[in-house]
Image (cartoon, rainbow, N blue to C red; front, top):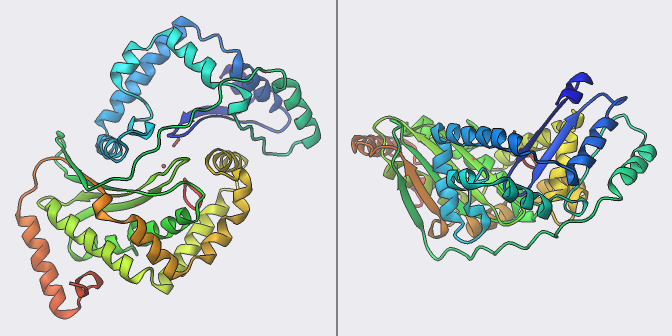
Length: 384
């Protein structure tokens, strides 16, 4: 940190569900110091016991702060029910009991197992001499010994039915999270799920925002996330309910809108708008050198074809037809395979009646699509 500060740059790190990333941002005439630091970090860390205690307390404090954040416990419970045997079952930051029992030797053993040049992808982006850069990388990293190869995780079996849970929290607001198991990052279905997530709940033009926020007035906020990963991920629907609104009414409305999406797909004008939004988000990641480096690293780590996948991203979005989107929606947005969790107190029933009466009044005039048939350090391809 001191070296980076003296050079006028910045550095940081993060861990997500699949990998740990270390990154520097420095002027192009002094960046090679960062390369030397990374070569040292890969196999030469001292892992001092005094520093271990200090950093362990920092992580425990971060974990405690996360427990106070209302969405994290709800998301983690949903994730733990979605994944029964795969390591995604566990939160990225770990459990308090594991952290408290962790020893210096335990950390060192982990470091020796997982930190090596064969387990890493190095990205350098900027105004550099590529030949000199490649030579310097070989000089610094070439002699480093390999570590163990990554073990193949246990595959998560397909859910045999719906899973539900209620999380009691001290918060006065009720929140709902629905998770659907999906596919791997970079698969064709992943791109279709991005489009479906946008159409379902990623803007004020989305189905769920219009239905739940504007029409039925059951929620104050709704978001849909396509969270694909190296191993099959999930699509999450998250809602924050209005005071007095019932979870049952919100879930029923979501079911209707998902059924309408499976039946109708995405309207042509909405599909055009969503493609434009995804394209813009994807290309904006090329504006800053650090963002571009992150993008390259993310695709190399997360997709079978690595960073070369970047060349096929936008053509794949453009090639998706409405029939493709309907098929993907039917394949993954199946409530018989969903995990449904809500957190907070038990809402009053009047919210359910209010939603029903308002829906009935609107149905007399203009039936909705759903009535006619009876959602990130911490972006992904377009927004990951």
